Image (cartoon, rainbow, N blue to C red):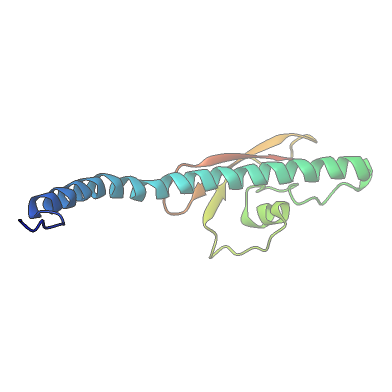
Length: 139
């Protein structure tokens, strides 16, 4: 009787390694590309947080504070899209050196009517697509 050997042949092992190599060559660039998409989605989240925070702050001030005492709100400013103003809206500390996102906008709330909307652009500092946030002016 002949003794039967078990295991894979060299050709079978080479075929499996080649298939795994092809899969890796296709998958790795796709995973690297996801980092840009993640930064874009995160910028949209930050912009949504800014818009939401500004709307809640505006509604709270309009509901609880009299019209004569509403002056001095953070976004009654020449630069409502500046780091200090956005940090006030988001209730976080200003740390311009470690920001992962930059916010910019040219509109001003100083001469805008109560409830006017100013658009800020939130851009990831490294790569990704910018998102838009809306800040409501209080004058």
